Structure formats: C-alpha cells, structure tokens
Length: 143
Image (tube, rainbow, N blue to C red; front, side):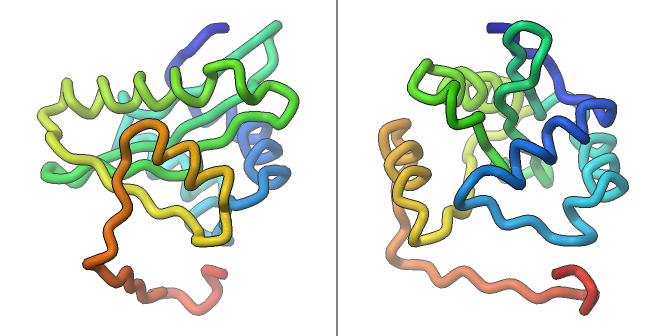
C-alpha cells in the first residue's frame, strides 16, 4: 500500500472510483477535471491517493479555508475495502491539515449512506444534530 499526494494526472482513475462508489455525489462543474485541478492547486498538500500494484484503489480530497478543514469524496474500490486503506487516507489528510495549522475538520455524508456514516463514526467523527446544512448553487449547470 502506497499513499501519495493526488495530482491532476490521477483524475481519470480517481473519477472512475468516485462514479462506481455508492454515496458519492458528483457535480458537473466542481468535479470536472478543471474543477478538481483548481481544488488541487488551492490545496496542494492535503489530497491523497492509495496505490496497490500501480493501480489507484483509494482517494481522499481535503482542503481548508484557513480556519476549518473539510473532507470530500473519500472512496476505496469495493474489492479493497476493510483493509485499512480508508483509515490510512484519512490519517494522512488529517495530519496534512494539522500541519497547515487547522484544528477542526468537517465533512458531509448523505443520510442514506450507511457504510459511509459507519466509517466516519468509527473514526471518531461526531454527528451534529444541532445544525442544518444549506447550500446554494451559483451556476445552474453545476448539477
């Protein structure tokens, strides 16, 4: 298992993982190659892939705004789950965020993503029942 920083050259393989993973919601603009490249340029040290036998089997996107860290699109190919890959990717992302002075991390998981919710709970991420998450798309085509 090799954990390394994600680069835009990994996009095609990573997108295949995202599109075949239940519970991942992709947006046409934000998650396009150009959108991910923009995110990686803004957060060059906080995004990781896991390789086994020269193939990408897992990915985590994370970044920050200077105050809070955020985790997005964490996925491991189904046949490689339950081997500690997801946990290792999260550990790398959290360490990189901590090294950049970030003290708190947030993420969003779909309510019906039972596997994802169990995973994050097992890693100590607490569910916030006191919040309502809201968003607004600034581009109608970003669906």
